[in-house]
Length: 257
Image (tube, rainbow, N blue to C red; front, side):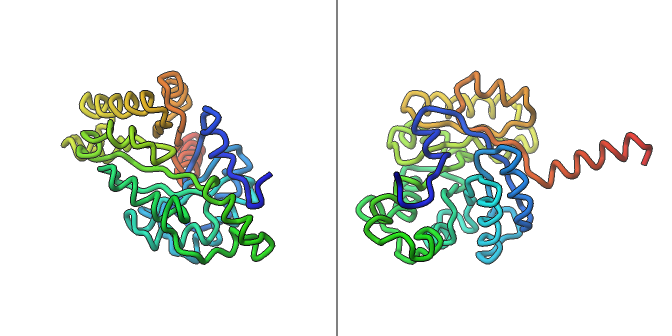
């Protein structure tokens, strides 16, 4: 049994299973707790687009743990080693980087997120060692195996390099970034454009060939079921803020407001 907090996301992926997630951009830990109790495997703390700093990430991690879900952060600065290290020291159990374009990008994340000899993460944990309850030897023995590494492939360069990125086997999930891919191919907002779909198909094919989990952002339960049937093993579904708006408008529309 691991001495540190286990990571069910890593365990599920390593066993060949499928994980489901949602995200938050606002900094109320209660949102994470709710999503956890709803049953999502992990909550993505969106530090790229959200209103987050290290202090708020610290609180959101606690909200995730209260809801018994895994906190994974989308780093504040693109693949910045200090941002990766700091988020992990605050207790997140995984890191997602945007704009993974090359094997070197994937390696940079792995190097920043894992301790030697697998990486070069600086030492300064607190929550990860249960505030001193876990001995250093036990912590170093177990912690690298509990860190989930994810990357968004959302640029033409990343699509062109996807076979080598997947073959390198450095990351747990390569996530199709349909929104930015639509932008990259010159079709803003058209995530169903044939060029975007072709790019997604190429990413999925490379992941299936090299036994890397592929991630997909689903807009509905029907699309999620389709993605799973295609072979995607990481499914993201909107964010807590979107649910509030959707349900609020559904009610107000129904009462004529």
